[in-house]
Image (tube, rainbow, N blue to C red; front, side):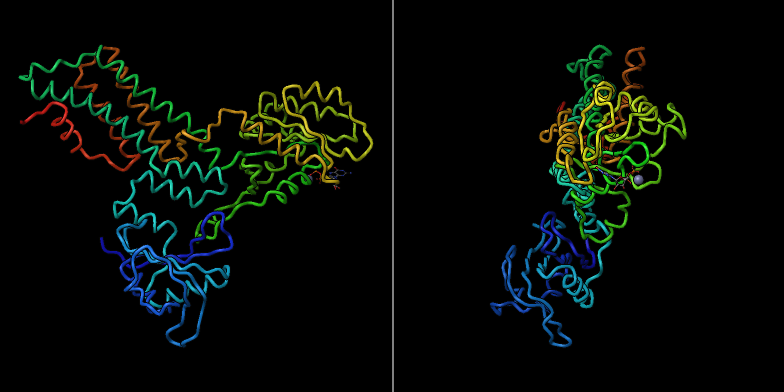
Length: 461
Ligand code: GDP
Ligand code: ZN
């Protein structure tokens, strides 16, 4: 395909000091040629592909040296976009990288839209749709762990599982098809309801498994929504501040990705927490008083994690007890704050109330106990069923929606089998399952069925 040449700033994850301007397209090398003076004096067009060169960017209009850079030259199709790609590494930080971007834009490149490099990789057939979406998630990924999820998916794990599942369905479909279309092939056993049921059940179980991992994937990508509750003045704001200060959010400089970050986002020992920046949720003072135990339970139930703060130097009140009532059964960490002040709280009663939860004491004023709190958050999370490796996390809402639809379709097929609906009617639901799964990886071509017919039964020989 023919596209114009695009450029954008892309900063690699975890290497904040270096910024890169990336160009992709037919004109990537000619544009860079106009601007780059290599130390060796050689021209880019004479240099081998996948090589890195040291030199200077010079504004051809003024002759002025703009930047000292390292330039990577990669000729298509062995690149991410399959096009010619030039990456200009600037070590001068964000100001100089913007200057470099301006320079390439003034000399023939167009500013890429967010995700446009990935879109090209998809359109040029380099990656499939689920991989493209994983890259988009990667761009938005705000913590290392979320990034690993995105990476795993990018490697095509999800695609492989979906492909395997579709293959199973395809074999059933081909079998039914051959029964219907080629009744004279009597050496092909007829697909019966009894034969079909275990196969369809298996497909359903596999789809369910994928959906189960989606909950976790979602948490990792978006962060555990975390609510800090407690009576007024116990130290909720102080807690929020100390969590935000100690765990700076990871933000990328890729254009178009930072502007939709609206929540407070912190990374506590690899656990992403999303402290919702919405009045009344991030800091819920008096919530039980205001809206009652039942209602507050509903509000709090939306949260993945509750941080319940008590005041060490104050008596336990009815309001505190109400809070425990409201958070019953949820993931809770109880924080007894202000231990630098004289004790007034009944600790025995607190331990009773908090017997199902982790309990941490802090003095936020003196910066005590925050480490223990972070440890508690991390262990609460990792004690769970989290398996960082070898698990496909379905973390994309479009995938989740399609998986849910395909689950429904296969369940309808199974229901049909169970009540003895004719096989060629059941076939319709099976086909729909297969197509819906195909949409996840951007492939729903009927030709595969034809190919399958030929390879599975050697028809038309
Ligand atoms: P919130 O109303 O629950 O959000 O409580 P704040 O975080 O606003 O804190 C209320 C007051 O308690 C502020 O003056 C804080 O400085 C103070 N405070 C917070 N944590 C501690 C602590 O550990 N020890 C002491 N002595 N004061 C604290
Ligand atoms: Zn406050």
